[in-house]
Length: 321
Image (cartoon, rainbow, N blue to C red; front, side):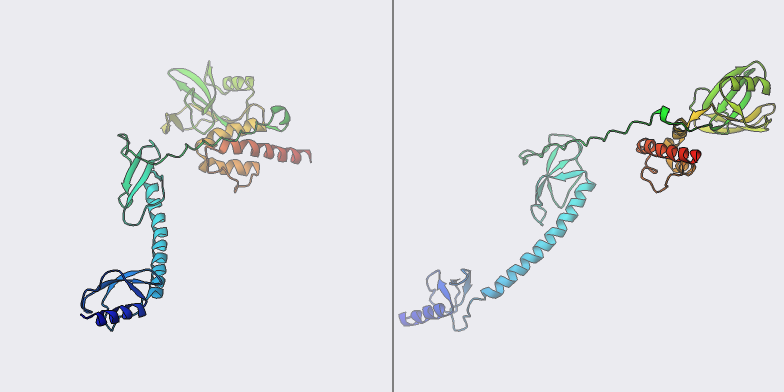
């Protein structure tokens, strides 16, 4: 090609807004490396009569749109990967490195071993080995939350309201010996269990002998003695029923107790099965059933102390009026 023709090509390149980055190849049908004077983008184009100016504005808009799409996808992917970390009991030591399954530094929540896993193939820690070397600095261990000190129970001297609790007394013959047992529930308890509130040996299986032992310990007889034909016996954690004859049963009332001690006695069953007995306790003491702690057996004692004190105060006011 002549020098005149090459000069025309160079003029056409400058007119389109480009600068040649390599010598002219000799023919306009062959592509050559051109650089946009305004945006600096390099492209391989044919320097013929169809050469068009750079579309850098459109490409900038396209670039921004692609970046927006990427950031939106990245944000959603971070949430998905974080949820996956929770299911595997892992924590991230760095931000998610990308969306193509790049290696990600994670740490086990239980054994604190550090692993370099693919972000799209997370797996639970095997709890063995030394982990992967070269990990980033580990975060300082989180300080354990200090439990708030519980309020001291109300003083017994302040609890002037007193009362008795209904219980169940049984006179039974075991291995030729008459036994008096007072139970928290309507069945014969095992000696030494938390259900057995009082126990004494009797010289004979008569109501008189049983009443003598009960009154000497502060118990009161609230009903007539009867001879049931069927009794429930507690054996371990089970109750078995048997047809019997000659056994005695009566409803009794406990020795005089302060209201706080009565509530403590109820607490034994409430703490074990709060969903079964808490409502009865709340109804008796006029406590709002929407209060926190009813369904939480572990926090019940703390909740119980404050609420019993409030219930006693309400009962005291009612009694004074």
